Length: 79
Image (cartoon, rainbow, N blue to C red; front, side, top):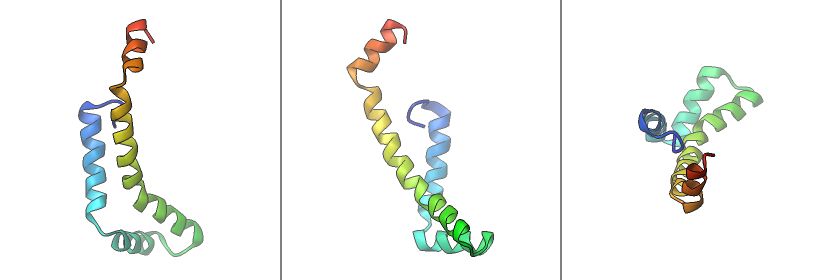
């Protein structure tokens, strides 16, 4: 989202905001109730519930790196 920007950034950020609007445990219970209680499903539900928070941190780091001078120099050099 941070790399591409534009409508991709808006779409991914809004989807992330929707998932983050639910409390973690409520989202976790809803996911487990829908996909079934097994170890693999618990791992998948944990990944889905925690991905938006990790994605937001990654997006902010990418946006910060895009502003660095060496990125501008690489773009000017044709990379």
